[in-house]
Length: 233
Ligand SMILES: *Cc1c(COP(=O)(O)O)cnc(C)c1O
Image (cartoon, rainbow, N blue to C red):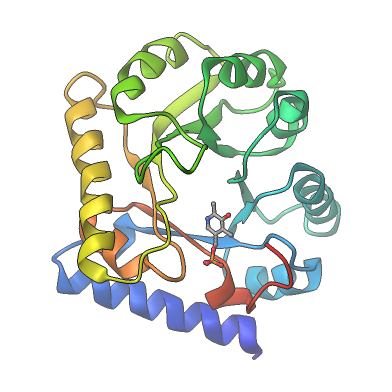
């Protein structure tokens, strides 16, 4: 037993309780353990506790960890999610190493990932990052631009578009958190009319997981509540 193990149990119990309290199946919410800035030792502890999905924000750091676990635990099917901002000159490393990419915000990035995805790997699962809070945060596409970007992305053979992702502005009030997340789930619902295969809503972090799950999140990205506070972000 260790802290990471205990924290994982606590978080999973919380997710279960929140889900049941709002009549959702707890299994419809996947926990992504955000391991950015944290050493492979702590990730190993999480894997040993049964956690297999991890999120990384920095390309180089993520690729080092992926390479490490491919060598040290080749039989364990760890799933790696890229959740940070991505510059176009780093797309190749993401295409060649990750299983999911959460932060597509323009077609150029999607095109590069598509052409750089090795053909012997499964399609890269991708999410469109939506700028849900306001124009101040620069990442993500505006709500009214999402449909056009979807039309473009679904033409790319090596990507599998799965849904939407958002990082709302930090907000402590539950009702305000919920209102923003609800906008996201309504957007996904409306898109499902034309694109019924969309099945993923990546939203909710350590501080706003409860509101995100009530609003319909299918993937929560939890870092500090599992691995402890970070030295830098
Ligand atoms: C760091 C980060 C997280 C995890 O944040 P915590 O507050 O530590 O849970 C989730 N999503 C993204 C995009 C992040 O950058």
